[in-house]
Image 1 (cartoon, rainbow, N blue to C red):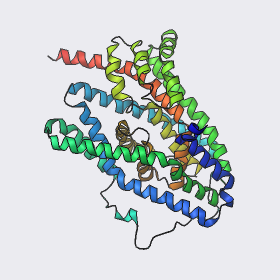
Image 2: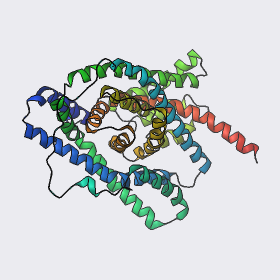
Image 3: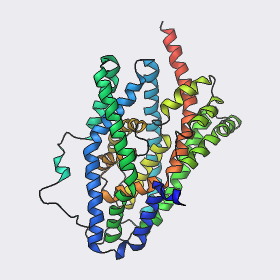
Image 4: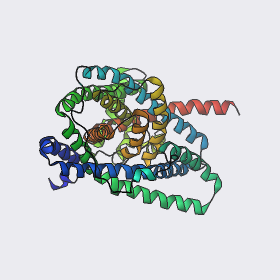
Length: 397
C-alpha cells in the first residue's frame, strides 16, 4: 500500500479525487495558493524547456554518431512517418468522439481564481520572444547532426553534463511533482464551474479512444502478417507477453528484453531486433502519439472549442513529431516537453493542461503497452523497408 502511494499516477488520481470531493468547500485563500503554485511551476517549466529540448535532441542524434548514416536517416524518417500516421488516425477519430459532446460542454460559471502576485516580479516576462520550444528543437537537430563531424571533446563533454543535469531536473523534479502541478488547476476548475459532467462525458470518448488505438495496432499486425488472419494472430501472440509486461510495469524500457526476444520471432533476420528496438523504444511512440492527439482534441471539445482545422493540425504535428525525439532522454517527464506546444498551437489554457496531465497519468499503462506492441510490429515493417533501400543502394553501385 505504501509503495503504491509513491506512484505518481496514484498520487495524481488521489489529488483529483480530493479536489472533486472537497474543492468547492475549500477556503478561497487556500485555493488561490494552490493555483498560484501551479502557475509558478508552469512558468518555470516554460523557462527551462527550450534549452532542455535542444540538449535532449542533440544528445539523441549524436548517439547515432557517423556509423551507418543511411540506416540512421532511414530509421529517423521511418519514425517520423509512423508517429505522424498514428497522430493523423487519432485526429480523424476525434471528430467522431467530439459528437458525444455537442449536447453539453464545460463552461466556467464564475471568474477564474486570481493568483497571488509578488510585486515587481514576473517569471514569464523574463523569457525573450525567441526563447521558444520550436527554436530549441531546430537548433538541437542541427547541433546533433553536426557534432559527430565537429569532433570537439569540449562540446561533447558540455553536452553530456547538460543532458544529465536537465534529465535530473525533469525526472527527479518535474516528474515527481505532477500531482502538485495538477492540484492548483483542478481547484480552479472545481471552483469556477460544474466539473462532474466533464468527467462523465470524457469517459465515453476515452472508450472510443481505447478501441481506436487497439484497432490501429491490430492493423499494423495485419500488415506484418500480409493480411493473413493466421499469420497476424501468430505475430500478436509472439509479442503479447511484452505488451503485458509494459502494461503492468508502465515502462517500455522494463519490457525491452522481452520485446527484443518476441520481435525476433517475427523477423527474417532476428538480429535486426537487437539493433532497432533499443534505438526506437522511446522515440517510436505510436500509442503515445495516438492517445495524446485524441486527448487534445477531446479536451478542446469538452471546453467548447473546435477541433483544429487541417492546416493548424499539420503545423502543430510538424513540431509535435520532432519533439517526440526528446523523450528518449527524459523518460518519466516527457509529457512536460509537449505542454508549450499544446498552448502555442492548440490554444490550451492551464485547466486544459491539468486535465491532459490527469488523463496522461491514468492512461499510462495503455499508452506504454500500445507503444511496445506497435514498436515490435514496426520493427518488422522497418526490416522490409530497409531491404528495399538496400536493394536500391546495391543497384546503384
